[in-house]
Length: 268
Image (cartoon, rainbow, N blue to C red; front, top):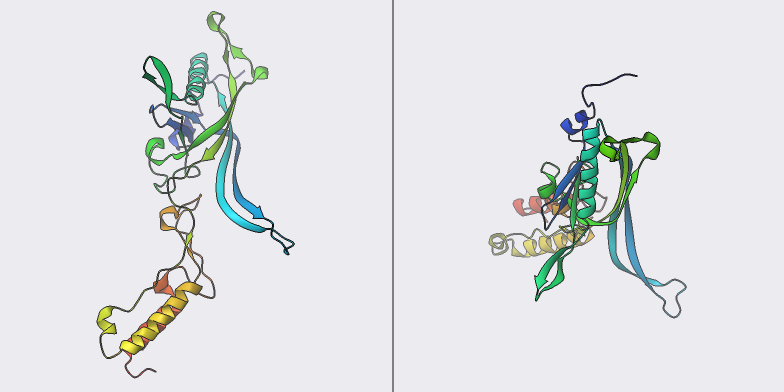
């Protein structure tokens, strides 16, 4: 059987392929090399139906959209020391799911819930911060609703001093995201003609231009909110161009046409 003196999996850490967890109130952190076996994200939109007389279909009132992440990964051990360290790390993650208590009149009262941040390369991170920071500053905030710890029995154990340390542990978590920034599409703002131009000889023409711009903004495609431009997985700002307009007022062809009309006194 071949033997190895170096842990080849350290290459994952050097490339930043690490799952990181951070508990907000205690500052506790733990990380694992990303031997992922499961990774999926789901988005669920909530609607409240209201049945009305005379309509075959109910009226749907939007409630919100939630995002959840399912992660599964293996934690292999290169040595007995590594296996013992893995047991400590998996135990740390379990402890991070418990709340903070405060003493009030000799009684323990829960004061803070265990909010968690997760970061994984450029796939799981806080979009408003970007993927460049550490888990404390750039991690995605949420709650872990389930955590499963399973030693792979078939792969055996290290057993020094009558203690057992699994050679491989299978972990999985269900994570519900709590975004810290606004998510959604925003209607374009109206770029009005300046008051200086409105008070000049072309006041009536400027009023017509403003009216056209208001119509244009109303009909234009909305823009994905700037503070959430990287949500999720995207490398840059997402834009939605349509035939009726673009999501940037200055880029709209009507804006250029309006500008030309103001600059050309002979235009009608």
